Length: 348
Image (cartoon, rainbow, N blue to C red; front, side):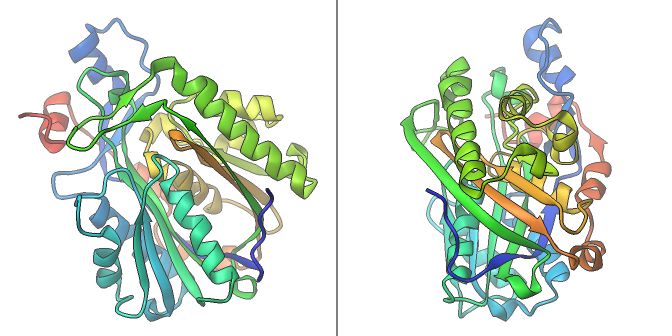
């Protein structure tokens, strides 16, 4: 089903955050696979010992507010999508809202849907603003993902994400043209209560999980809007590794060039709920007025959200008001596996 908000809605401000620490995949390979494996990416971001989903969300939220140029009190909602909320019982959203000055007259909620928790919050924020119930709403996708030591996930499970402020089209830097969502009960990835690390179904996470949902959501959106891949300037897909978004883009008819600006996984890893949100922020850092951006998330369990954005002339005036995604990625400090294990609490 093609979805349109009642009132024209879009992105008013955005902000990214990526931790400075990097673990090369060669370190995971050296420690667990005797250097014989073929790592799926070059390196991944690692949160420092004083960083979590809350602290990173606050940084991204402040960047989004700086670009939006609005008072925090105008936010009708602060919603945080993540797989790694620091509390089992206590909302991340209320801490973030308090830190940025959006309390007390705001909705606050933590969203979960594996790696599409960020776009789930984004869809809800669009609906809230698009219905006229709020002037602005903030949606954040942020994670500090974990992989079991030695598991294939450890190569890619990373940290980072982005925050978006939604508002009326008259003040937007990118207007929403439409969106779709596609879900099913596909048990490709899960973590039961009390378990520290997630389990996954190996190659099953590609077919029928990732590709079935990503392709269906994207095709439904493009067909519903009467748009072809040639009408789109940039495409951003969820990035669990390098192969998946490249294959999905080929099957949909997109070129590598259309993916390039938002393809961050080889330098950042898979930021889970922050993955497509971070890719979108990287594209907004370089996009030109009139360009279209396709954003497609994926969450295990499973589902995909697809959104099509059109950039306005206001973007060029606002993007330099906060650090770019590339600036966060560029402040890179390499750690070895021992430092990584200490930072991530893997020593029990």
